[in-house]
Image 1 (tube, rainbow, N blue to C red):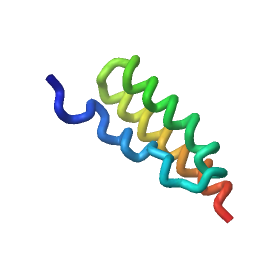
Image 2: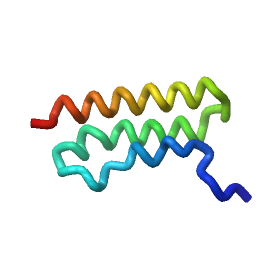
Image 3: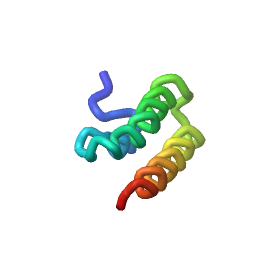
Image 4: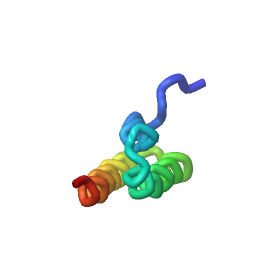
Length: 66
């Protein structure tokens, strides 16, 4: 039984703490990250894809920060 998450980076995709208008932007990135982590092979390229997806999510959220 695995006690630690397979991809610890997933914690950075959480969005419930954000204001509602930023949650709308962040949620699809979280959903995609969870799908990638669940369905893709557990390897370095998947980790890289998740890291780059996080970078994209951060940029998208910042685009809506006033």
